[in-house]
Length: 84
Image 1 (cartoon, rainbow, N blue to C red):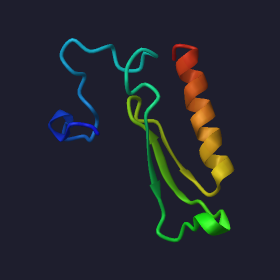
Image 2: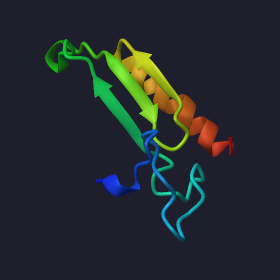
Image 3: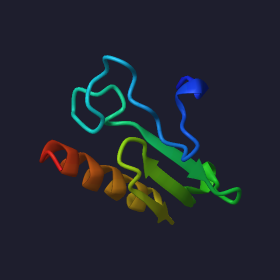
Image 4: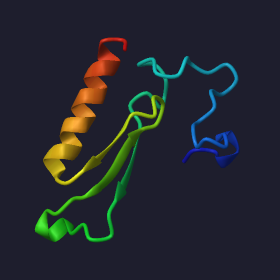
């Protein structure tokens, strides 16, 4: 759980004192994502729709399938691995 006191008004997480630089692979949240499923998503029917956001960078996207969601994860994680 993220300490709510650490959230800024923009919804981003503040770097904890003495913490790692955000966005580096050693940061605890560098691989963290927030996923919001649309109310009409149905796991049993494999219907996944919603929004996803990488916590540190703020990069976000909407998705209409589990493939879209996984593709977003891969794109962002590859970008982190390249140091960007």
